[in-house]
Length: 345
Ligand code: 13P
Ligand code: SF4
Image (cartoon, rainbow, N blue to C red):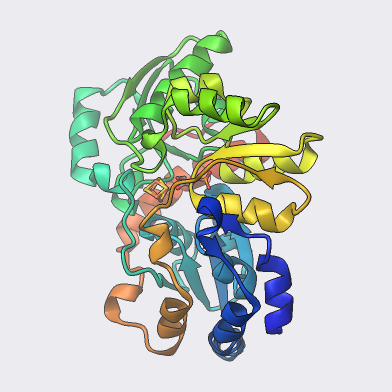
């Protein structure tokens, strides 16, 4: 790849009112790092998976797979490479490791937490299961491997409603996202599905910030704008939006839409991806950054490919991986085959 080719892709990126923009000079300055990473990938038999929230230079300069958490988890099952570098946050790296116990999984970020994944621990879920013995425990993919090991089925923002609807039990414990849990309750009610849903108390600090009044303002300022939001936002935001879905579902919505202006209430990485992939469409309003996702950098990727530190590896015990795998496989089985959710004995 040349600096000109990279600039040709990134020239449309204008997030935060143009504060994050790319010039040809900036692309030229990044090329030695990008070329070094792309050469090392081949040498080390490595692939780079990157969530849509990381920086455009990672997504368009070095990534082999990009997408939402469901798509990337599926991609992680397909690669033959011996090393997976996962530009995202730790829980996504853990998912890749659970699906590929024999591979090396490396996390290049410097702050790889997530306010949702950090909200609940495995021992807490164990206690909750004693308190709610009749409930099916459904965890959002934004959880640690220890938490997945204690749950029955994992979901992502792209399949949460369909999976919960398909669970034969009417008593559900959903964790850790309080706002997604409220959206889930509303959606089950809207579909006429009778479920009693207990909800944990976690939030995503990026998506909880949005206020429905902001949407009114956007509609006044940009008449005809289509407002898209993520199911981690509050029910008030989803009510005021035209569409809600995972990051990849929002991209599909824009791809298929005949409209020309969109406001996306999610992390800035998605706004920049939309600007790159659909230069003829206008992405308006501001976006919000996730400090964890944005702690991934080209320098970090080069470091983990060259000389990873012990903390850059994802290491999990065999027992946790086996138990957590059950929870992830239950999600794949339902999503791919639309068969009943195999619940833990
Ligand atoms: P997606 O699965 O929609 O990509 O969401 C992941 C995430 O962390 C959202 O904050
Ligand atoms: Fe976690 Fe929110 Fe960042 Fe997604 S955007 S990784 S849910 S803190």
